[in-house]
Figure 1: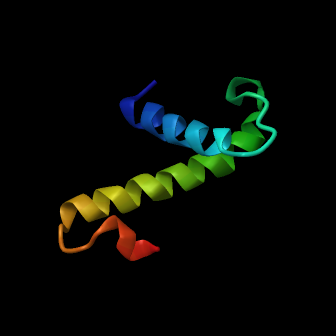
Figure 2: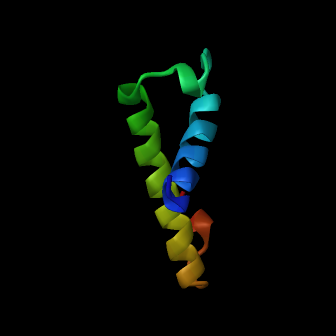
Length: 62
């Protein structure tokens, strides 16, 4: 597994764990995990962009 995939999955799991009734990331089918991975990729991209341009804060997106 690549470092990038590990980071995406770690953030995706964190988003998943916030859901009420989460049964366990490892037990969920891939079809349920993928939307959380998409959210994770978007969040990571926003943070990367904020780091590249310090004039933009992460709170500018909200």
